[in-house]
Amino acid sequence: MNLIPIEQYADLCALMADTGGDVNKEFAIAGQHGVSPDTWTASKTGWTAKMSDPNDMGRTAMAFMPLYQAAQAKARGGRPPCTLELYAKVHAEMAYQKDAMGNQMNHHLVLANNGTHHQAWLECEGYWTPKVGSPEILGQPNPQFDPALKQQFAALMQREHDRIFGIVR
Image (cartoon, rainbow, N blue to C red; front, side, top):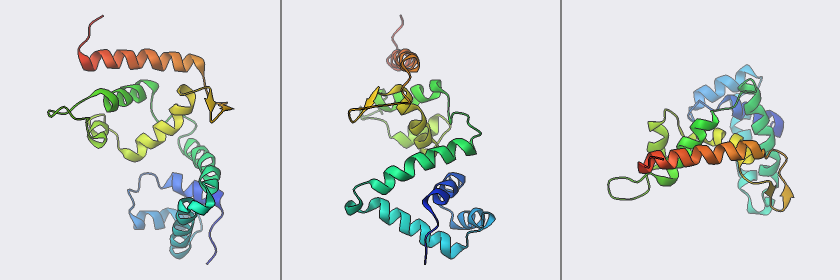
């Protein structure tokens, strides 16, 4: 069976972000876009296998991610998936909060405490990390990097650090 094109796969994956792996919901969304359950299943299996294949050396995943991120942005109407403030708050809590035993907090608990879940967090990370991370990625310029947002993120992280540790400035 032939796989749907990677562009269409990315679009459908973005539309299915909130299905929680429910195949009936996936089939319904695929069907609304002219893709049969058999074709969707084969495409999902095939593209996942290709992206996981060590012999592919990440080429397919590297081609998929910008398509997927663009599809996510389109599905959100171009709006960010979360605010920079929420991104910094969750990021800081994952880095600094400890449980009663002094261990790092379970990230799923941190996400739940902030009214979000793993898939939504991945979308937030994919959106904000290139903007506030580093001006270079693997020695190449990062065109999404924004120094002003990086500075704002650093200030928000400091504020969240101080909040978590009870520091009053």
